[in-house]
Image 1 (cartoon, rainbow, N blue to C red):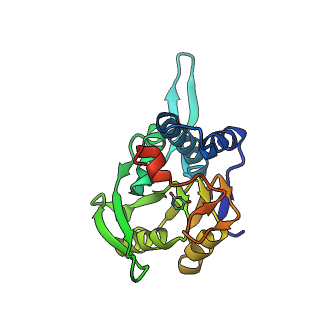
Image 2: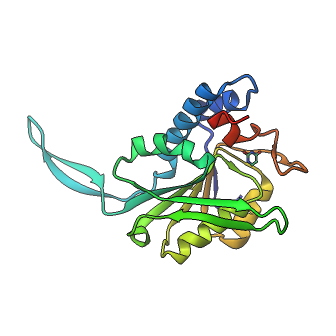
Length: 209
Ligand code: URA
């Protein structure tokens, strides 16, 4: 699969198994989402450019590396994507955070934006969209459209579980957007849930069901 990175790290895979488990309660689910997002963010930022600097150690001058130039923004898709922000920001504390809220119109099935607040300098930032499940891809595609219209150029999508339908939808519209995920599950069911998936991630994270 082009432009899809499945993060096979054992810690990520182990945590995803716990997330899938129907017996995992909201508190643990929230913690696991945050921890998984942090580990995934480590991979999704692997291509950040470095520059060499000189640092005085107690013994000598070391030629050593720091991240150069590029600034990051995380953009969670409300509401489940919020759960991934804490973990990601722990790795990149200087990142700014935008929020995008989208719902699916029950009649037209179209993705409709109801909220959007982005950092003023989003056009100068690399953007990582977060959502726990990339299912139909409708909200992801709409979010990418919003970000591109705001000037963002380098956009990545980070989700914990996706499925072939979600990947296809995103890459049909935006082949340049790299998807980072922990698992590509089998399919969507008739209610558009990912199977086997982990159920309704929003409900599980916020305890609303
Ligand atoms: N959103 C969810 O929370 N779960 C799914 O399986 C699909 C979309």
